[in-house]
Image: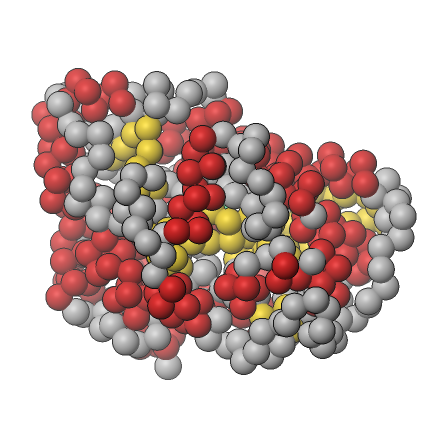
Length: 438
Ligand code: GAL
C-alpha cells in the first residue's frame, strides 16, 4: 500500500509480547527446543492412514476454494489418509466457534481445528485442549522458515501449539473506483476526517450505502481499524496490556468517528456475512467496504480486476500499519488419529501447501521462504508491507484478545448498532477490559 513507513521494531515487539502474554518462552531454532508432543513419530510415506477431520469456517465461496486447494494437495501427498471436511459456515467463525467449544467440552475434538495465533490460541492452551506440535514445526524448518514473532504467538512455556497456514491483514478498505470517480471522492483519503468528507460526497452523488458492513464481527473489525487510526499503533497495542485506558480521549474520538462511519452504512443484521458486504462494492451499491484481505479472493472469484474494477488502501490514518491475524491449525488433545493430524499439519506448513492455499485465499504465506513470484499484485504488496510496516494485532480475529473478551466487545458493538450511543459504547468497552484484563 502507499507510502509504507519504516518498521517499528519496538511496536512489533510490544505487540508480540502483548499477544503472547501467556508465553514464558519461545522455541529455539534448529530442533533444539524441548517437545512434549504426544507422538513424535515422523511422517510415513503416503500418510499414517485413517480419517482426518478438519474443522474450519471456510465453508463456501472463495474461502472454500482455499480449503479445497489444501484438500487436493493433501490427497495427493497423503493418499493413505482420508480428509473429512468439518467446516461450519459463518465468517470469522461466528457459528463455528460455539460448535467447536461444545465439541471440545464434550471430548469430541476434530482431527484439527482452525484457531488464531495470539490470545485466542492461549485460551485453548490454558484449558488444556490442544497439544504441542514442536516436532512438526521443527521438521518443517522452525525459525528458519517461520517468523520468530509469529512462533512466539503460538508458544507457551517453550512449547509451540499449532502450525500457521497464512497471515491476513484486517485494515484494508476495498473501493469501487467508478463510484468514487462519479462522486469526486479521492482515491486514497489520508485520514478519518478526509475519508468522512469523501463518504459525504459519495452519499451526495446518490449512493445510499457509501460504506457496506455485514454482521457484528465485521463491525467490530471496522471499529478496531478506527481505533488504530485514532490511537496510532503503540497506544492501540497498549489497550491490551492496560497501558492505554479504554476511556482515553483517543478511544472516545474513535467511538465518535465510528458512530459517524455507521451513519453511512447499510443496516445489517447480526448474522449477515462478509461476502454480501464485499459484493456491494463489486456491484457499485457501495463505494467502500472495510474487510480483511480474504476479500481479494472474493473479487478474483467474481472475475474482477484490481485497479479497474476495485482498488484498495489502508484504512485512512493506518497507512504503514499492518493489522495482523494468522490462521493456525491445532492438534487437539484426545484427537482420534494424531498421526493423521500431523500429516495434515505437515501439509499446511509446507512451502507447497502454503503457496497453493494462499494463492486461493488472498492471504500471504506464514513461511518466509515462499517467494512472491506468481502471487497477484495485491498479495505481493501485502508481503512487502508485512516486512516493512508496524504490526498490530486484530481484535476481531483472535490475535489481540481472548475469546471471552471478544464476546464482550461484540456484545458492546451489537448494542451500539441498535442504540448508537457512543458514551455507552465506551462504558461497555471499559467494563469489558476490566473484566478480561483482571
Ligand atoms: C477470519 C479468518 C480468515 C477468514 C475470515 C472471514 O477469522 O482468520 O481466514 O476466514 O475470518 O471468514
